[in-house]
Amino acid sequence: MTTVRIEALGQHTDTVVTVQGWVSTSRSSGKLAFVVLRDGTGLLQLVISKRDVPEEVWGRIAGLTQETSLAATGTVRAEARAPGGYEMHVTDLVVIGASTEFPIQPKEHSTQFLFEHRHLWLRSRRQVAIAKVRNEVIKAIRDFFYERGFTLVDTPILTGSIGEQAGELFATDYFDLGKAYLAQTGQLYVEAAAAALGKVYCFGPTFRAEKSKTRRHLTEFWMVEPEVAFNDSAANMRLQEDFVSYIVGRTIEARKEELKELERDTTPLERVQAPFHRISYTDAVARLNTLGSDMEWGKDLGGDDETLLAQQYDRPVFVFNYPKGVKAFYMKENPDDPRTVLNNDCLAPEGYGEIIGGSQREDDYDRLLARIHEQGLDPKAYDWYLDLRRYGTFVHSGFGLGVERTVAWICGLPHIRETIAFPRQIHRLYP
Ligand code: 4AD
Ligand code: MG
Image 1: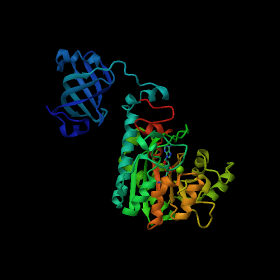
Image 2: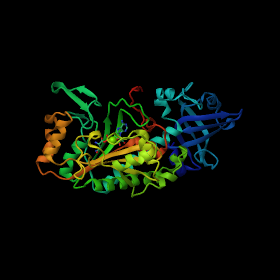
Image 3: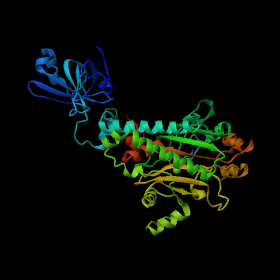
């Protein structure tokens, strides 16, 4: 007997095959039972008629509770009215694993309860749809860079230096060498790789011991970070708008079904095309003040300010050249206004806030060393990084895009914790 996945049933109509999966729903009258089966690739309606199956098989019907795993054999028929478009007229059915009182029922559960049962909740249609959108976003990210001749460079997770922000580090004992830190970013390493390969990116999990309990923060998240030799800040923003447009375009095209399942109105996403809007930090502060915010020059934009500003535009907006004081040590000083750096954030529309942080890097040895001292960092830990400015320094820029924030925006989710299978938050390490 051929065993097939539900997605492939179209090639097996009017033949007898076996499918394996989990029970979504089941209902039965005295003589006829309908079971909707789910195998991760689709849904299939099983039709079991008392008179077509041996008595012992009919006897199993009552036990087909939600999430029971089973193998069903029968003839596949196209049936437009059935979920998934096919039906199986069952001749044999074997229970693989019983499931009594599955904790997640088709009713309202608290968010807390659902996250405690995240390992089971992943099976729901909504969570499956989100996982598929995430998969598409990640494929689009890789394709974008591959098609443009970038080389993927895998950067270490255990590091000896601070990438972004002291105080937000996870530390672990590292043999005789003292502390190792979980990477907050792969950026410093891709800067080295950019001098070897020209156009590079890293893509992996990053860690921040941030005490932020917002809907935009996780302690572990995935970030993709391209780095390009001889790109200045303006070229960096052009790369970002092409990149974000590509990801969004690909995803709304390839994941229509899933976005429909998520009830996402894709009209705002269709507008996501280069060029994005651009506004300097200084102008953004003035603009925010006219909109009623009490934002002061010199402070970082908060989540509410980002939302308010982004609401003024019909597509993503770049805010560029922030004050030095609120940004990382490696950003290049703006020669036209040394109070600021040559950086940008990219704010997504619809209240999703910063999805990208990017900058041109400080390529001047003395200035970079001064910044390292100013921020109280240990110059010895950055000696290798300073070498990049000692041996053939070069204008270069890059950025980091957070996968979870991007997926939350594309899916239209209220919180980023649903965009990753097992989210890590300050108060969550289980499951
Ligand atoms: O702005 P960030 O901190 O930039 C960097 O790490 C740079 N090294 C990137 C670079 O230039 N190569 O982080 C970049 C992005 C943010 O815009 C956001 O999308 C995401 O990473 N991000 C987070 N996502 C979820 N939870 C958190 N705690 C995040 N912190 C940053
Ligand atoms: Mg940032």
